[in-house]
Length: 299
Image 1 (cartoon, rainbow, N blue to C red):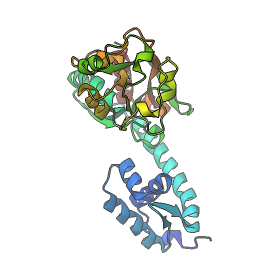
Image 2: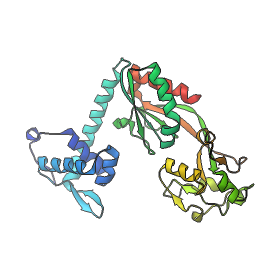
Image 3: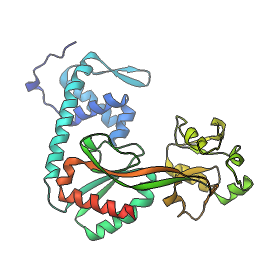
Image 4: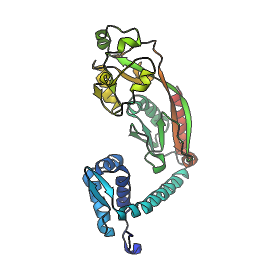
């Protein structure tokens, strides 16, 4: 099916087009609403409005998700190109800004956003009161190319050629539990002693088992009776004595109400990267915040 219309006669609304684009990529209105940080009914009205303006049906409902119609598939190619172009224009404009004023968005996981960024941002605000900071809290990698954030703190090196990254250092993921839960386990001394322990999983796919078993723990799915995709919820469960959790040692060691489980166990190490779009480095404001974060995080 080919979309036949006079595009010059269409009053095109980019907000509606973006709603369509994200819905198509996420596969459902609920997921798209979360990705865009807006209410699902509002998003649905924007998609419906685009369909009415264009005079075509873009989605068909399949179960709880949505699938593109032939017209939707054809339109998606054009809207993706528009989104990429809009992103390049926005990046280029921001890159030309030389004022140390304006808003900077920083993306980080829940734990880093809650535990590491607040004192750093407080110090930045003292030194640069003209810079306003938006902290984007997400346990997934924010899309910097689409301007979901200006700067991101990640645990992996980006592969996109338009992104630049600085390795801040390595972090150790350590097993923690409440003192009461460690006592309940009989103060384990070896990995084998944890064979009957409960753990909190933060990975619905079960991806925590393999790396932990590489340390000799010998765990199965039965060892993970608790599941949450929120690191903050996981950490609260650990502090309440519900199970064992794993967290960055910089954060875990600073908590007074937990202790390391098997302190001599080899940690799981992972890198910390500071990432930004290449064009943003021409912005004095972005460069200032990027360099500030780099120095503070290295501490």
